[in-house]
Image (cartoon, rainbow, N blue to C red; front, side, top):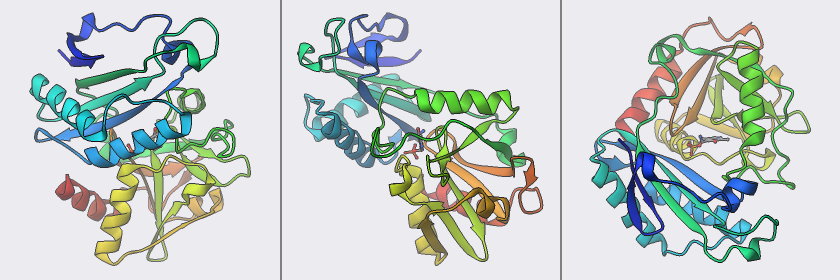
Length: 282
Ligand code: PMP
């Protein structure tokens, strides 16, 4: 049973309800974070909270707590649930308003903290790797709805995920409107070629993933050259290894993309090395 904290009190999972006039529900007007818990400790909580507050700043969404207060509330919820290994979903919605768009009608934003568990992919996929397909749905253009904002409107990503599933793949590779590789529906992407690691630059329109930043740090510490730039599918088709990263999925190897076998089609050594280093880190 998950613990849910909302607007100042705790609820059981099936008792935690949001009013139908909440603009998070009516318009996707809100933001969220997905945070992993390892050994009862919340991984990179500060970084997740900083990203949440930056999303809020962009959307002019008031978070009625100081960052330290919110950190304490997240910790309290996790400890109440007695989570050892789990997942926190932290949400801030515009709050209850009326049926019009006007956010000014929402007097108080709503803060929700859910402490639970999550399994995104079955264990065997981490040993075998997954297949990706490039989907027709382009990642949101950064000057329209900047993908750095982790908003409650995830339709762009959901459409991409549906396309991938329809094509028989676990995940979607999304391009930006100019055709540059961005990320997957809920994960960032890396590849290895010519002794270097590559990942799309943030300005192309991606979520600046916390796990992505961990991999960048790990690569730097290991002396692996890492490039963040503009790349096309050609670069990925010819990579030796590809893997994707996210708080829920951690590091997942990719063995095929658009029907092209990547490298020798097995889970690569760079993936294994970086994955071990990441597991050490968490
Ligand atoms: N991209 C998108 C679109 C995401 O939703 C996520 C989070 N699931 C990620 C990348 C990975 O980000 P993080 O490592 O911070 O979980």
